[in-house]
Length: 287
Ligand code: 1GP
Image (cartoon, rainbow, N blue to C red; front, side):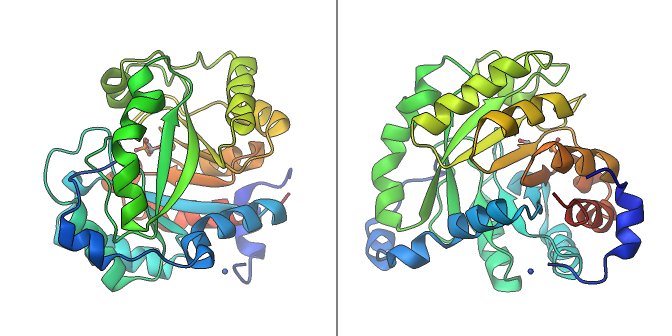
């Protein structure tokens, strides 16, 4: 755990291997028949297996509004070449109508699993491999705790998509972010790891399968290692961490503190060469 990621990079010879845009049409409902239980749970089974083995994973977040076809092709190429483990697709404020095209393009061009990280009930799409069925458990906005989930549930069920129950926890990243503003909730203060830990424990006891700790896209400060470590210590669920991660060092520290999956969006939009460096950093963490 103590060795720095740069040293690990050279030692690494081999790499180890919500809610919805539009309501589904009747035709779509009949096209997407329920999958077998095994197939439907494939993404979560892989996350849980990696969690139990201590394998760290890297997810690139794509905001469909922010990528054109050329940028998407470049992300796919770099993802395939540099061992990206997941493409997360979604955003707190998706204005354009590009979610479906983005997901279909990804599915055509790569075998990397595509997971919807929905910012609203407008972002359900049956063509992805899985959808994080989020409940914003750090907040006290009933619409984001259960209201939107009730509206989305029938469409998610009928689509047959693997829906992974996820406790979504916002941590203060030093300034208001789109997600804190849109959700109308207060994030957990970054110097209160015990609140984050108790919130994650509540999610676990409520039967959620994943915890997603987020400082919000473009956060000034990423989530401190102490907060991640507290959640990791007190909660047995796989932990996804994102928001304001801009360097391989921070990605390494985040994994080392207990994150299972590191998510990076904003920084990669600005500099795609980070994919290679962050991927090495994440996969070089051993526990
Ligand atoms: C935001 O966790 C994601 O919800 C990723 O954040 O865009 O800051 O990398 P960034």
